[in-house]
Image (cartoon, rainbow, N blue to C red; front, top):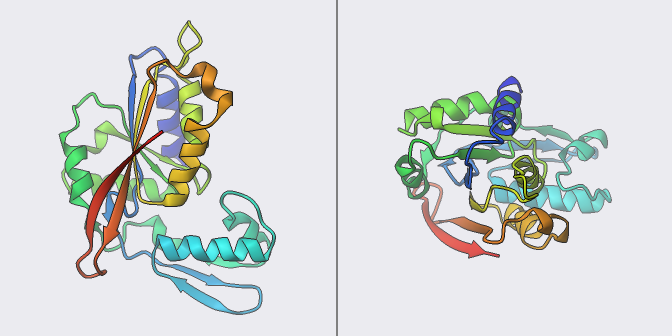
Length: 232
C-alpha cells in the first residue's frame, strides 16, 4: 500500500511536466501468464477453484447476480455476505510465463516514457510485480505501478487526466495507450473515456485512446498471444 501511495503521489506531482502520452499496461494475462488461482467458499458451503481471470470474472458475475450485488468489483460485497474469497496467490507472481509480444514493446520504450502498470491486484502485489519486471529485462525504475484493488480502471484513468490540467482547462494528456486482456475492463474504459460527456471539456482536441487487447489462445502448456487494436 505504501508503494501504491508513493507512486500515485509522484504522478500527481508531475503536473507541470510535459506528459502527453500515458502508456498503461495490465499485468495478469497481459505482461505475464501466472498459475494464480482463486479459491472460493460460498455461504452455502459450496467451493470453487477459479484457475484464471476468465473463470474468476464469470464466477463473480454469477454470484453478484444471485446476491443482487451491482458494484463494479463485487469481491468486497460478496465477502460481507459470507463468501470466503482467497486471493493470496495474487500477492506473489506465481510460476510466470512472460508474454513477450507485450514485454518486447515495454523493453523498447524510451527511457523517459511515462509507463504505468494498472493492475486489479491488491497493493501488496506491487513489490513482486516490480521485481519480476527487473528479472525479465524491463527497467522497473521507469515503470510506476498502481493497484486498483479491483475497482474501475476507467475511473483511475479519468483521475489521471484530471490531475494534469493546463491553464486552458484541458488535460495535457492527449494520448492513452492501454494494453489489457479483460473485456470487462476494456468495456469499462471505453465507457468512461470514449463515451463520457462529463470529461469532454477536459479532453484536448487531438485526444486519442488506443486499446490493445491481448488475446490468449492455445492451451495452458503452450499459450500463444496476439494483440488486437481497438480505438474510440
